[in-house]
Image 1 (cartoon, rainbow, N blue to C red):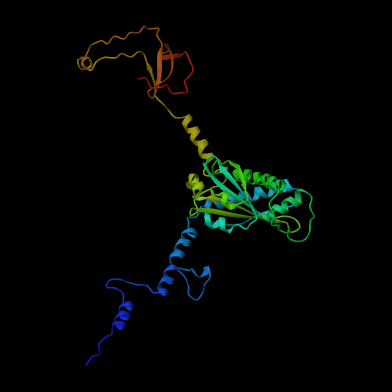
Image 2 (tube, one colour):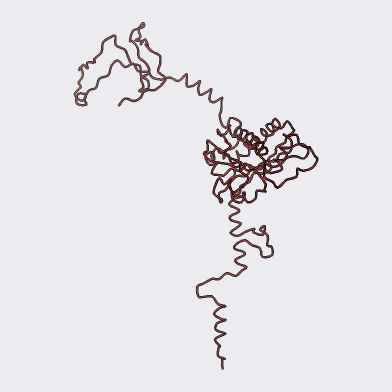
Length: 346
């Protein structure tokens, strides 16, 4: 005989079994879905799952081949400009160029640092330049005659003085001018200094989740001096020249062929065109035209010495007087050829 099931047993059985048609995930399945590894607690454990998909959308952002050419050119120009600015041996190298979310970048900036917001005039958007404290103190020591010690510059946790901010502004002006020159063969670009900030939250130039291109430059100077300069360009800033950045490097002329241009100009000058000499024009009705017969005469309101209009492709180009040279009828021009097209008469 079966034993009676107590109310306590019924409650336990009901709690263990989900309702009909309902699927409940356990903790292991939830961790797998989110990309967490139960054996590791660090953020590096998120190798797959939803977080990995979000991160992959940043790392797999389409490549822009021409950007590498532009920033390689910027490295060469910036090395020369900073040497002239500091009168010291300066070596600038391209450290990395990656895509990152704007909010993630602001959270990763080591403080203290100075952030410069600049405006791309032709692209109607903004960018960001970050200078770390080591580069700031190194530049101050070199320009103001500081001690050249064989040790890294000690970073102090104090606000930057007016002199230090002014030196950084002068250095950033050089960086922005060289960056505009680097973009010049591709597209005209003018970068204007907008403001200088020490708090990253005051340097917000785009939405936190928007992707941006982060370019890191390493500046090496004498006696272990130097630091890092980072240039951040949101993808919305680069959107106006995106098609140009997708093309492959075709030389400094970027696709222009001077040989073909000269050949085209030569052939155009030797091209034959048809020129009409219009004696006079008269407006008649369609009824009169339909009644024309062989032998009819159309009278034009003109005299033998009236000017003749020279016309090419339906455009009046000049006027002159009709005459005769040998067995040929000729026109003596009274004015030079008009280079501009006349506006169509209503």
